[in-house]
Image (tube, rainbow, N blue to C red; front, side, top):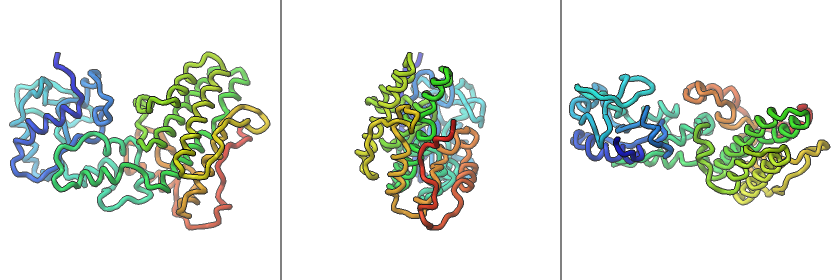
Length: 367
């Protein structure tokens, strides 16, 4: 058995010891970015069965394919015990395999602006607008800003990564407001389902709320929420994570309700600490005359939107970013589809009286 080491470290060694000596004086940058559990730091020995191994992104011109062919001929068939040959050739999902001939390597060779367009749908080096930010899935932003850069002589890759580290302040407020609004829309539902005797429904609704709170906590921490497989693993090991775990494992309606409210109270305290909006009392309140304990998430959504300084952004409906509009994989893995959907959800607006904009808050008439 070959000893496992994190994929990002394997890529660094692979570049330095196997790829770099074959490049001569070719202008290039090199990194391990894009899709893959290794880029997010979540890879384990299980990850080695697909899309993992000696691989990297080489940002260079290779319009003739000569560089790719050279690497196929000259790269070693194994590196640090791992095969450098991947099958099936050119497939979306590839795995390491043995070969007796040239290696079908997993070194992606492309100019960096072209790679950005494929990954994000735009080139951040030319500027990042509101549509760019809101139409880019959090997972894609994590894949560009995560991983590791091994060679970047003119700093172009590092500058783009730095520009995508986090939202500008007003957009951060807007996306946080949309996330609080998502919680507001369903925070009373588990109690209502339990009241009707639908324990399974209450459990499903509670798990759904835990997901939304987890995403909120990561947004507060200025960390791009990864897709569902890694969402809970990405949470900082603080009291909110513990309360969410308690809510998921609770054996009674009351315990689950209390754990969810306690998690939301902690998130509310954090929201106030960030200083992005006027402070809101971070304690649970009754849900209108039904009495279910909730955090009143709409209060935080409204405070955040009121603090947005850009009147056009403030006037937008709280549909939020593409991740808050859809979790369809076919959508989130297609930059052009993301941009089309966001354009439909956020048509061009002009500054107008904010009183005409529907205000956030739970709808008490939804059952």
